[in-house]
Length: 111
Image (cartoon, rainbow, N blue to C red):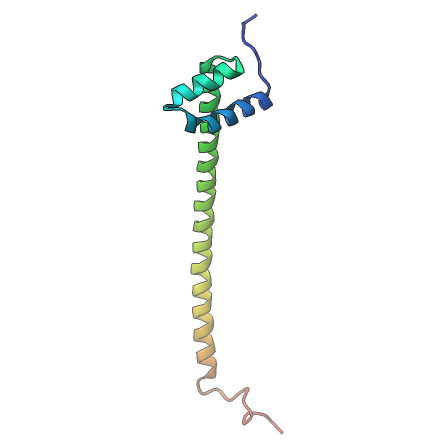
């Protein structure tokens, strides 16, 4: 047996929430960790590891979100550039077809 005690995810989540709430009441992060850990009868290092793991998860999710946002922005910029090109072509074609063309005008109709 390794001597490790397994804690439920709910317990870990509760401990991290208590740590978050108690930070304002302590002069340092170390004192907040020690106080919450003592109140929950767990080792301060255990709570510190849970906090570090949660912080890494949040940072990874933020990085993933930033990458997705950057990829979406790149896609939208490329799409906007393509739409500008198409709009320019259509504007040019429209101007060309109107200049001097009576094919579709009233005068050009056969009676």
